[in-house]
Image (cartoon, rainbow, N blue to C red; front, side, top):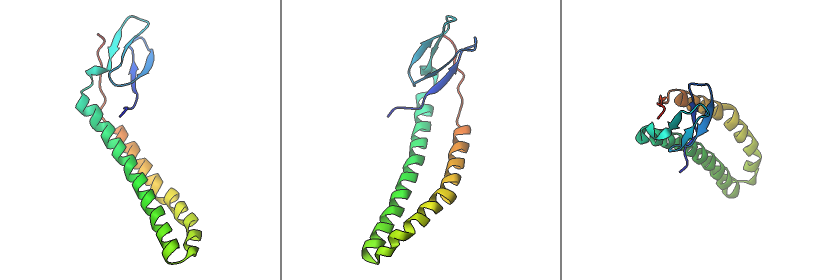
Length: 116
């Protein structure tokens, strides 16, 4: 699993986005290594974010599957209710999910790297 990019800002003001485990030599001569970040913290955060995305995908799949089953078993008119369900999904569920995900990302730990 590939992790999210890590923003590294050098003391000279130069900024670079690195993958976990990647090193960077700044133009000022400082060298930054993301291996200074504890792997259990970083990958724990990546697992938590991935679990949140999987919850949303599974919920959307469950709703779609339930509408499909209802349309096939009960009545085909349930297909006409699908736009209402999708609208409710985007207007009610997704804004709360995004806010919760942003709050969790803001509460994530920050690490202060030291130049090598």
